[in-house]
Length: 301
Length: 93
Image 1 (spheres, rainbow over the protein chains, first blue to last red):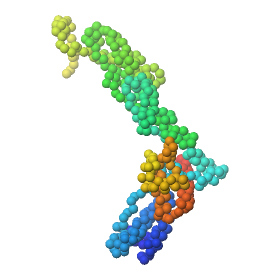
Image 2: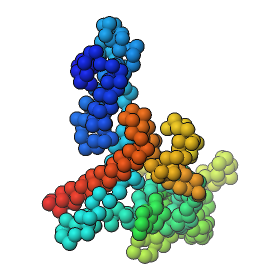
Image 3: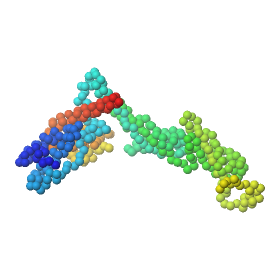
Image 4: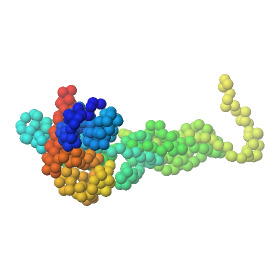
């Protein structure tokens, strides 16, 4: 660091009043807030402030003159944010005013037109869009629902989940964002919706698949069973001779299609034997003519 | 993230009488919410600047009034310039 007397431009014999006056004179010229566009001024201001920190304090000055501390040992002023850092911020400066160029806007030329336009745009700026996340149940994502979202400030908005919504879809609620200025109107709320998986259903496109267990009797003889869908239980006929892996179609019971109509729900059957061994069933199968059917016949492994 | 008057007084290290004076002079113009003033970060920085003007630079009230008014105009002009530059960039490709 340079000699602080040189920095302030005073003699080594200057009185404390002279030092203060020299500092004020320089600081007024160099203060970053009085030079918002001048980056170099900030560095020079820091140097001047550090010099004054040393010489403006009678005790520190005495120790500096005696060689006990050197100029670089002076305390650094803490890193501070200046007013200009906020005044030029992205959020707009509520104090800035247009009176410094209002006369230019009154002219009738392209430059004035540009000034007027940006002035108008600023006065009527649309509010910011606000982003939120919301999780909904699988069934609600298919049938549609209304969910209440509580915002950080405690207020709530009701979100209409459209039928057939897919995981990760973003809903736009017009006018539910941050308020605008002037005639700008508020921004929108953008809600990214996560669909919670359902252990029964899987969805692929507009089709939904569910696995349903059936008894041996239903598999062999066929019959009516009840099957859950996103819109409630329905009856379905199991054909005679149904098997594990048999896929049946419930037409129009899938997710709503974008262009109208619905996808299908596929029901994958799984044949389940009774949980406990059944002596009667064992006796029957032992005497059954078809007992030698081998589903692995012809397999290589 | 705004502050109440009490929070602002603490953050800015101001006495309430001084703040009242500054508000009266409209050196500080906080936002308002439900009839209560709400202070922003920029108000803290502005308060610090006003104190420097008065304590370090020896500006009196009339001087501070003039300085703040000119400074607000300067920032207005800088903003207009920045917006024109943006527009010129967009228009110029």
